[in-house]
Structures are given as C-alpha cells and as structure tokens.
Length: 417
Image 1: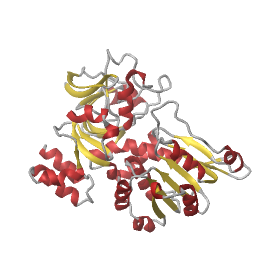
Image 2 (image 1 turned 90 degrees about the vertical axis):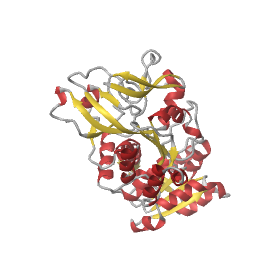
Image 3 (image 1 turned 120 degrees about the vertical axis):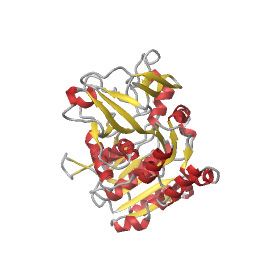
Image 4 (image 1 turned 180 degrees about the vertical axis):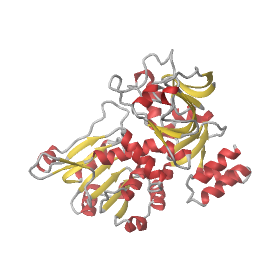
C-alpha cells in the first residue's frame, strides 16, 4: 500500500514523499492516520537531525517518519494480534516506549514506517508488546492526538511529591488543598495544566497562572474562567509578571508566603529563578519545559533546599498509564484540551510548519493528514469565510464552541475537504 509521509533525512531536511509500504508481517498492524498535532519536540528533532537522542545516526540513508501525537483507525491486523485488535478500531499510541534495550527509540523519531505525519503506517510489534497501542473510544480523532501531550501534563502532576515531617517518605502528587503556581503557562501546554488542575481528583485551593503575553492570558481567562474555578472550589488568579515591579514579593503575597507546587513551563532562566524564589516550605518545583541548549542552567537557593526542604523534579513525557488517564478523561468529558489548538492544516504544510514552529504564533498546530489545506488559524476562519463557503461553515461551527476546535468542526472538515 502507498503512503504519503513527511520524512526526516537530517538537520532541517524534511521531505513530503509518497512511497510503498511493505506488506505487514504477522506481528504488525496496518493503520490509517487521521490526525497528528505538531509538537515542539518534532521541531527539536528536525533542527538536530542525527544529533537528537531519539533519531538514528543513519537517518540520511534510512529516513524516519516524524510526528508522535497521532490518532487513527486500524486497517489490517497481523494474526499475532488478531485477538486483541480489529480493523476499524480507533487508537492512539504512547510514543515513549521505554524499551529496556533501546530507551530512546520512539514512533515519530526512530522508525521508517510509523509516525504521525503520514496517511498510512505500519505499527511494529514492539508497540503492542509494550502495551503502547491504546484503544480510543472518543468521538473526535483530534482528541486522541491530544492524549499524548495531555499525558505529559498528567505525568507532571503525578511526579510532584511532598515529604512527611521527620520521615523520609515521599507522598506523590500535588498537595491536596495546597497552593499551585503555573509559570509561563498561557501557552498550549499551560492551558492543559490549568484544565487538569481544575478537574482532576486532587485539587489545590489556589491556582496562580503567570505569563508575560497579555493576549495569551486574555485567551486563557476566557476559556478557564475564575467563575468556573470557583465552582470547583478553587481560587484562580491570572498574573502578567511583566507588569509587576517586584514579582517575587507579589507572588508571595498572593500565596500567603509561598507555593506548595510550581510548574515551570518555559526554559527561561529568569522564570526558573522566580519560581524558585516563591517556593514554600516543602515546596516542589517541576521544570517541565525542555530546553534545546544542553548548557541551560539557573541559580537555585540551596539555603532553602537545606532548611525549607524545597525540591525539584523534571518530567519529559508521560507514562502509558498517564495516557490511559488522559484518554479516559477526554472520552468522558472531564477535560477538554481543545483550547490547545489554534491552527488547522493538511499534510502538505507539515515540513515548513515544523521547521518554523517557534516563530508561528498561537498554540497547537493540528494536522489532518488526508486533506489538502494550508495551515490556517481558527481566528482567521471568519475572514476567509467571506470569500470561501468552506471556511464560512467552519467559522460558524467554531463560533458556537467558544471559537475552539471541536468534534462537529472535525466532521465538517472531513466531509468537505
């Protein structure tokens, strides 16, 4: 079967190509990809090429398919897995395989025949063996794509810990009823952090969300309102730290002395140091945003580490159980990460979008791999709709959903593009 896919050959060398997939073996599965959301991690793999930990050294001779946030339908199942999966099943994949013999190997980075930026792929045996092919029962394919980034967020919350006085015991998770700060968190992943904190089963009493981009903060406030948080028993405050003269003093005042849990969503030294400065006793700081520079560092107050028991963790990706939790919460409507998405496009726009991702404003760029469509901001649908009935229809649908991408819009797009 022929597939169209975006393949990585080396640093900044992405090519959209059509080629023949081999016949699946008895331990493999043929799948049809419907959606793939573009992650900053794919940008990092693109600019680093073979220097990236997950990309094979011989990628120039054996290119890999990029994209690891994907969802689709199973087409054909090898006999080994015939009792576990069937054609027509929707699925998502946990790309962090964590294979004991090859911990960095991952769909979207390391394999020639599986990645999200493709029409059809072959799912290798290792994915099923490790329990990383996950059934998905939700209505919309795009939510299945977002289960991977959401699993990273879920994993971050689960990785937080606190200690018991006088005991070397770690109680995992954010502090129940505690004070939570989300630094640099009005971007796409930050919105997911807000959504999960508001709706998970271990809620803080206070959430303070910071950013220096007022437009992003305004969008976040319009989606996750102070009133909604109050209904969950949570006080929610948004802060533009660029407008505050003494951010440390201001954040300490808001929190009554410091925060129990802090998520740092930007690899910026000043942000990390500000977060460190407002940790409460036994406060836990998670450095979530992966830097592209290997020498990234920041000053940490080790007096507080010693006497106040402040501590630090770093998470990258989520576990398979984190992804299952994400899929379940999305399927039952507990969380709705649609707020992450700001742009929609077809497979043809993936190479340039990926290579230029940091310079493209907005949040997640969602790709429908079987359509031909330029990358388009949801906010631009209405303007395009003045001359194009297709975009007029999309604009009308999204307007009824707080101008967010939604299952109705997906059905309309797949039926009309």
